[in-house]
Image (cartoon, rainbow, N blue to C red; front, side, top):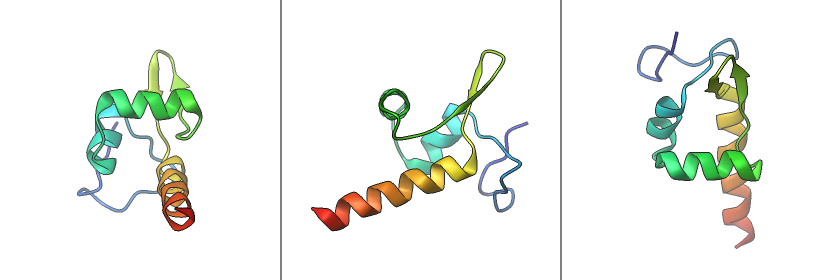
Length: 71
């Protein structure tokens, strides 16, 4: 089951599908997969599905903020 940010605040028990992460981060599918391949955005696998935990999204945002501060 996929829960979006508008349903209720995320908990670490929820996992987001790629389209959910795309909406939350305002990134294209291609960019999401590039970030996953580069190790900048973490994910887990459940069968054939790639799922992104809320903590991975928070960590990715924190990484972007740190990079912006350094620039």
